[in-house]
Length: 197
Image (tube, rainbow, N blue to C red; front, side, top):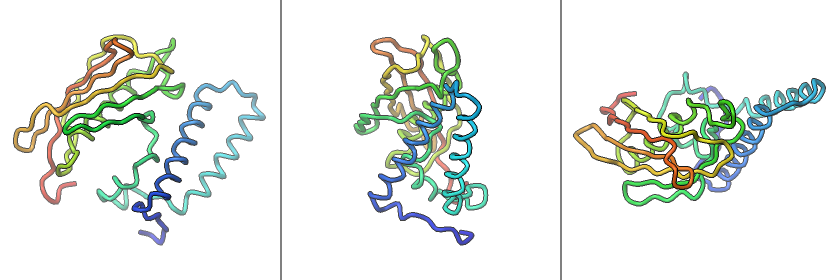
């Protein structure tokens, strides 16, 4: 792969290091999104981030060039598009977890950005639809916003596989703040044909 060096992701110590890196990035995302730093501090932080980028660059997987489903193995902890899930429980075809949207996901007036919620649902429903089965892709995702989802609140997310019809997998997820349903989603996932991208 273009002479780059990659970590063996079968090593749990390597995965722990990648999770630490992902958590550190989440911390930076939150601070940048909520910063009121003076220009001198912002410039110093930007320089440090540039240095971190240069340090990591030789190990970068270039998805557009190196397309492969192997990149799924690279994702635990390192992808920070969604907030980190904790207390994850798998039970057959169900997933329960806790999640907290932080400052990085702020839309306005203390609420989570409306686009961040479908992104979380897509990840969770995709995990449920793919768990122990051939790979599938999202065909549609319908999200209903039931109540305001607030940042910095510990939320509960629940998802389950509703049914399978041939290559079609139907799944449902809900997001709760305590007993309040803040959003829910229905998704259709299509199992890929052999050799499909």
